[in-house]
Amino acid sequence: MSINARPSIRGFIAKEPRELETQDGAPYVKVRFGQERKHREEDGSFTELGKTYDTFVAYDDNVQRIMDNYVPGDRFIAQGYLRKFPKGDTGMEGEVFVVTGIGHDTAYTRYDVDRSARRTGPEQTAPARTVERDAAAFDPPDRRPPSTAPAISM
Image (cartoon, rainbow, N blue to C red; front, side, top):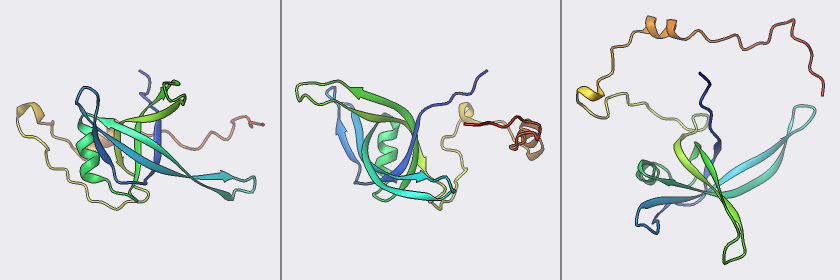
């Protein structure tokens, strides 16, 4: 089975999220976000390229989650997909990132984790977990390549 990987964005909330409605009356949220751009130099240092600003939207459960938990300046990581818009009546084309999952960026945000159950009932009951079983279930690979790996030249 292959890894389920999806596109993602990382940035900061630039303006207050706005809750709107689709043409069908369904709620969605529109958020202006920024990203800091850097270029890695050959010596390992970074050159600041400035900030760029774009828009993301979210639907369904993510609307209230974003409205309740994100304010300008918050750092986030979101997964989703890019939706492109062809030239319409305005003669302009564009794109927007559609968020299907979002969380605060832990590299910048301090927080507490609440592990209490969100819902109660037999359908929401998780099996008991043990540290030993969890540790045995995942044996991470060595992050370093073997010393016999061929050199890659570019």
